[in-house]
Amino acid sequence: MRTIFHVSDASKWELAIKNAIHMLNYGKDTKTDIVIEFMVNGPAVTPLNLHDETGEPIRTALQDLVKRGVNVAISQNTLRHLGLGNKDIPSYAVVVLSTALELTRRQSEGYAYIRP
Image (cartoon, rainbow, N blue to C red; front, side, top):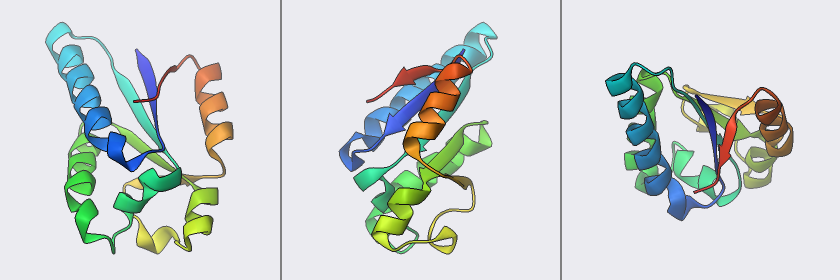
């Protein structure tokens, strides 16, 4: 199963992270291959800013998920809008050109779309 979580609202991080953990645990328990990517844009990028102390719990939770094989993609357009660059985000995150392009690409690859 392949799933892309579209996180654009910072208040949805806790729910998105919990859902990903549950899915990964299900995969482990049932020996089902689970592939998860977070596509992040808009205000949800702010907690990923390394200079935002309040975002530390989210960054730590995401780092733990990355260790379990989860991918994190951040919109270049949002970074530019916020005046941020690659040096301002965690090294585990990849920057993609745009949210719309990444979501379309992933859905064409068979990913299920979830927006918490």
